[in-house]
Amino acid sequence: MIFEADHPTRQRVARSILEHGPSTAAALGERLALTPAAVRRHLDQLVEEGAVEAREPRVPVRRGRGRPAKVFALTEHGREGFDQQYDDLAVQALRFVAETGGETAVREFANRRVAFIEDRFDEVTTANPHLSPAEVLAQVFTDEGYAAGVRALPMVNAQHAGEQLCQQHCPVSHVAHEFPQLCEAETEAISRVLGRHVQRLATIAHGDGVCTTCIPATPTPTTTKKEKVS
Image: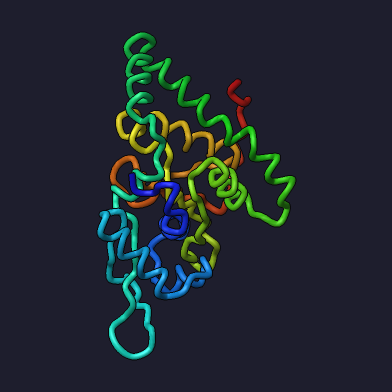
């Protein structure tokens, strides 16, 4: 197993990449208060294990003279180290639900699973009044293991276009690959708590590096929160 208990620092390095996305060795050292030598040692081991790969940065990161610093990103194998250990059991259970209860039963299960979004949204909003609704959602998802963050969308005609919810990790991605109802229920719950139509642009479950959801700046007047799924 990649992230064993006897390698806590290595796990911290991998988790930092998971939560912050592809990172340089310098950025990792700064975030984790590690020496450059220590970061390199753990990165070398993670690369050797196939958990992390070195990439050329999309925007060159300069480190003085010489070539731009490489960034280190989690591989699919690396992500598996953070996934739940019972994926196979969960898939088998949902297959049974589908066979015995049909599509309706699968959708009901999916809705119940994402009930935490609506259950916790108001609570987190009240506790963090300085956060935008999208940032509240990111906190809710992060608390559930999704390592989520928010990015501002580019301005359109000098107007704020909205935000993008980015989930660097999905604890149910392997299950959602076979049962997309999980992703669909999640998107619908996001739309309900925000009171606007949102669009899922990418999902880890279907091979993308991150789950992204476009959240427009203007709420949809006709959209209201539905009753929470009990």
